[in-house]
Length: 130
Image (cartoon, rainbow, N blue to C red):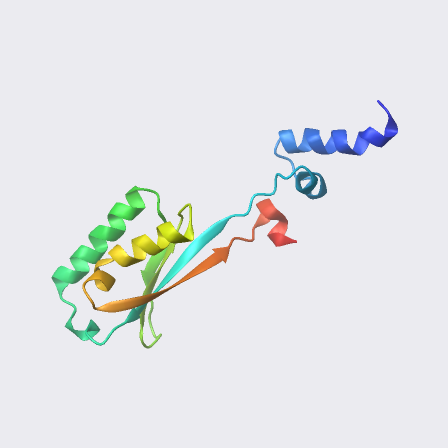
């Protein structure tokens, strides 16, 4: 083996065994971007009319999405005026997440609105985007 090939061989070996070689992985195009989609549920003018039946439909929707592997995290906010809660989606695209937002019963039935934001994941697998 020639000395000039040594560094690339080490990186190929590290990448193939899931070891971190950030420079080599980037050079080989193996750094995949990971995205989550954050739905902030904002209370609408009719939010004070939400009934137990509405909340039951909302929770059933969350259960179904979770069972389908579409939810990373969700929950209500406390002490954040005007905001009911948040759902963080694991979907293949922003458009898929937006479709899920629109089918949310609180939104579809007019009790709430939403803001959807794309969040690029920074973690140890991608060296926190460094």
